[in-house]
Length: 484
Image 1 (cartoon, rainbow, N blue to C red):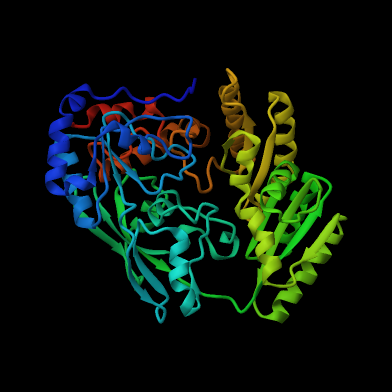
Image 2 (image 1 turned 180 degrees about the horizontal axis):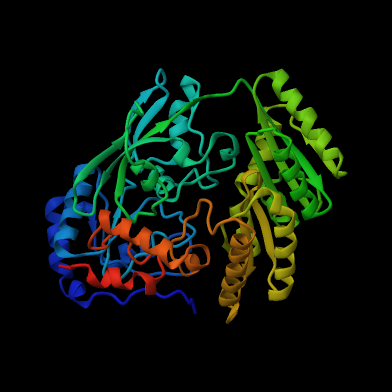
């Protein structure tokens, strides 16, 4: 059975369930409130599906004002709230508790303003990541962060987890492309932070909110930085006969001063699954790098030449440069479908630790050794350029004890990330998955400061309060919160 603990539900709140649902229905609409357990089952977990819990109710507003009205009811009645985007979180960030109301923003999908002259777009945060760039395509612009789940994940979730993606090496993650937000506080108050003019002063509240995992507010609108599409872009496929050598190639490219738009890594386990799934034509070898560069044709050719020289020193088994748009699409298709393809091999846990790029060869070696120790196969597919690793630990969910063994293996990998100077998460967030490992990265004083900040924004600890902070450390804050 899963081992991650959650707080016991508040029986007083459960006893008032019908009253809570009635009040929510009065301030939004009957069709926006879901309370039938057969229908709320769709919201019992996120993509960390090993952990599930039916919420008390689900609210699906269409406007910021409706989010505010629902939040005011929950605040007045002391009901915990779980903010939710598309539910693609891999760390249990959207896992409900039995006494909670899920407030989902997936019906809030409007593009509110596009201003290419000032290079921003303003959206409701239920819009999917990929649809933002789709709206901009005709004008020659794009939104840079591109998580692998971009077809489904929402801008709200991207902001909550500070998501990155394959092209974040050059263009940055969500926080580097977020200019402003409209958010609903735990009290229901609507607050605007930042905006297209970037004229704010004082504390960086926007930076604090991005990556806060729904702990501080519900973000309903966002102003996003957009970029002109590059003159050209071209990926390369570089194969190596060892994982450590591929990691060394990444480190040497970064040390050279080159800044590709992306450096992605896939090992042989992942390659087998991906090639069968996407027919991408990847070479049969221990590891592959996808390195993409952009710019004018002369800039592209110069960068390719330098990367070829760096790779040649490490004796690659293959160096392939895309010759046209179809070949580029085929190279990226395999990488973008990697997580889905891996599902064909069985159940897996997808981790998200980040390490210094110089430590990649060592990390890959140690993960291989741990794989043998635990007797579980692991596939490595990740954003190598910024050291954001995504080991996929394969296990059989129907075999007693294998989930627990996979979780212990994953915890060892994440501790190792911290030991080499990295951190527990790059873009998936802490959620419940890494919650009890936070003491590995942060001291008791560090955690206390973070929890005090949450208390400023959410004094009653209503927003996603069972996530991020270890339950024992956060218990005093949760206990003194005034509920209903």
